[in-house]
Length: 116
Image (tube, rainbow, N blue to C red; front, side, top):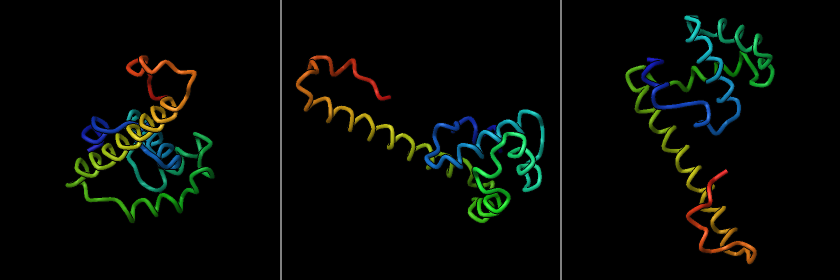
């Protein structure tokens, strides 16, 4: 399952900073072949110095309450990815709108502007 989901998503696709931390922990654990459960994830978050940042182990329990079934993991990952893409597009739109009203910007340079 991890290979299928990690082929779709990366840490940067999550909006909630806690979810980014969880993703990084899950990825590190998968790389080392450690199974994911409340105790092992809490231990990994301790090792990362992030346990209190995410509110573990309670927040892990909260995640498991909201987890979709493994059968639908790719569908859920694509929903997360789509939300991430919409946030990036919105950021580009905001930047373009600001630039469009900035008299110091060259309007002909619009194709060279990038989202930051």
